[in-house]
Image (cartoon, rainbow, N blue to C red; front, side):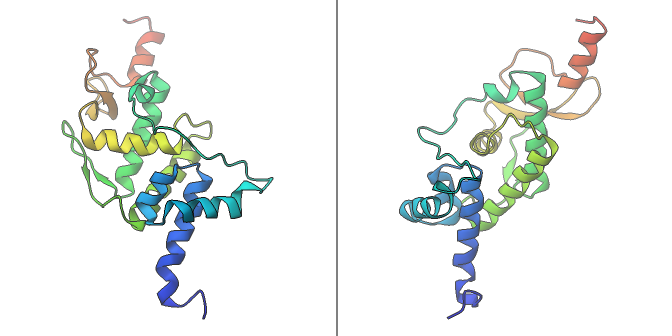
Length: 189
């Protein structure tokens, strides 16, 4: 029996995705959603490969997953990073962006392919923002919030026409963080 046999390919991809998501400190329920592995199997993978490894300081996330959108729009920097991540989700083929509407989810979350594409988008986000403000679990919730569309949406800046993420319940005018910052530096209010 060889691990390279095609009959083991599915299990190997599930295992590799679980390892990748554990390294990002994803919650067990998030890992289970994409891999289909049992909670017990996920905990065993963590214990075997991460718990006693001194070079990898991976913490297991406990408690309720993130559920507030304020972290994505509380400052211009957060808003900019959220916009980048949302656009990376679209680039990875996870969502179809539609201005003025909530994005459409293109893949079922309960597939390994979804998990791999999500990790790819998050990897790119980490490369673009080394001092990232959005952890893996918050990125997971960001995608949910975008698809729901009741609080977050992509919109076009009234000044520069760039697309950015906006709090749809906000009373402020639709100006992107970059234009807001340029306006403040010029003393325009």
